[in-house]
Image (cartoon, rainbow, N blue to C red; front, side, top):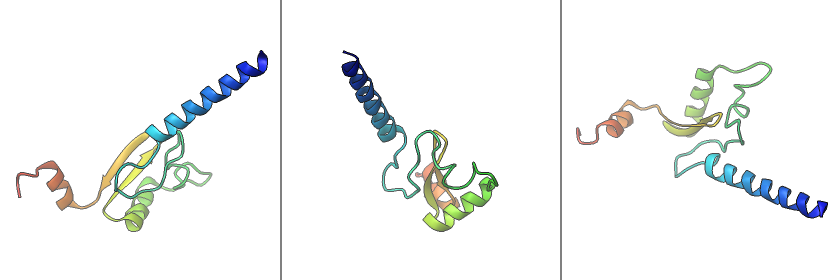
Amino acid sequence: MFSITVAIVVLFLAVVYYYLKSVYFTLRGPIPGISPQLLFGNVLQTGILALKPASLPDVLIQLRDKFGDVYQFWFGSMHLIMINCLEDAQYIGCPEND
């Protein structure tokens, strides 16, 4: 009886982990970016949370150089789409004003 309960709990936790990972921590669409880690996003991969942390502006500049003017970034569980080109931001904000 105990082993069946443990198996059900393990299966439930695996399904919850898969759901959270696939819904909240995956890249979306054709926008490039680093695949995020569960709960930490990209802060561990980019060195923002490290013994000798990198500054956020330096990390964003490195990501812009690597992925271009538009890319995805996960700051913890917060999903951000970074737009570094003024023309793109104006087009997204006011598409009818060509």
